[in-house]
Length: 220
DNA sequence: GCGACAG
DNA sequence: ATCTTGTCGC
Image (cartoon, rainbow, N blue to C red; front, side, top):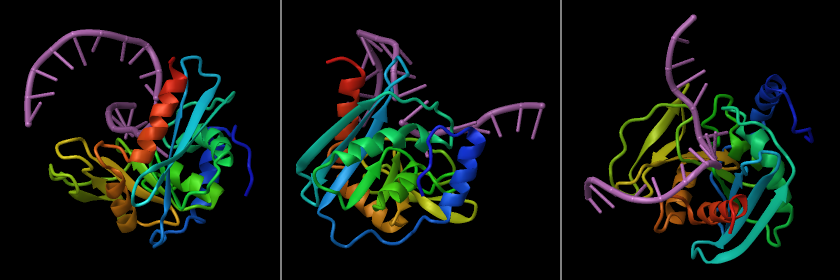
């Protein structure tokens, strides 16, 4: 279960293939009272990184907690290996949360991944918590044109499977790529994400975490 | 061999 | 992601 994070691309890929079989796809818990959003950013001097996790009550979406962790760590961005770049920092941030969330929204793919183990899935396995991937752009899969209205969506297909949906979270705004991470599945993930997007494109928890990361990575 | 490619 | 200001469109 426990492994190092400075793996070579080949080792990382092999590990993903093994871990993918442990991912559990099932509806999210019926009772969700706390939802978290996570994000990571690397400053210009890429020798350290910043992670942030924000929690909100659900379905009321009242801000609950914000944790930020900054540490010396670096792993390059390699398409398909994002989890190795962001999870080490995220784990530190999650350890500092006062209250454990019922589900975690991540800024990346879940199972909509070449080896079905995107950031959200990998993080979910480590935390043993339900996770959902919310990516701003596509990594893999095909889909039809999504209607212009908030709430409209199209299935994201990959290798013959419906791995997620492309969801319009705001009218006339570029859609989001939503895919289950771990202990989650497409339908419930889509509904949760839509309900977490109030007045912006990104789910409120992720948006809050993102703002915190930006504040740290930049100045101010 | 030629594109595609989360953040 | 990060580098960066103003600006066109709904």
